[in-house]
Image (cartoon, rainbow, N blue to C red):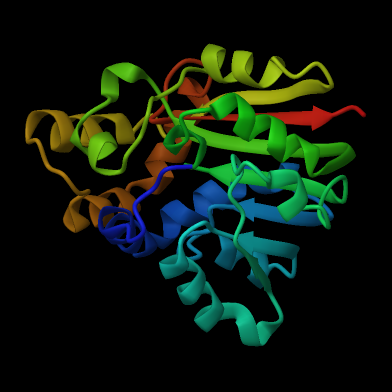
Length: 242
């Protein structure tokens, strides 16, 4: 997988989002019902979502391909006995490098990861290989190519998805069942479009994120209406059959 050794734009974005506690909690609550048993997070970054799982006492393994993020995660969680791994889900030697995890996990989730990977089909196949039969894979990615803008370019996104395209990607694997797919955060579309497409910002403004954090209660209500057809992100949950 090609990636920048030091991800300045990504780290700045994660730090900005880290300040939005209500938003992070909402994202956590949206995937938590599908997470069980032994869990692996792909692309933990600086731990914005990991924090909630750890506070909840989950049996979770954190991972990231970048040294800068693993260093941060180690300083934050190592003394608490949390395992932190270097996992590249499209590595040539993926099977050998993750042999201890194959077929052993109950849940794998990847939030805002797959859009960074050119061969997204291989990424999904490899993540599924880590699950036990009955285990679940949860993926959250940016939605709607029409919204692709400066933020996507700076964060090195290859694409954005729809429910249909994400479901189709996952269902190319014959041994899975689609359990749930939905759009997430429709209220965020306006801010993303104005700041990234109209104003041509390259990084998410901190002030915008703080304002949106205050609007999360409204965003939750709106998503009850729009989760079937609109959102800044799209989520899919699939279950491995064998």
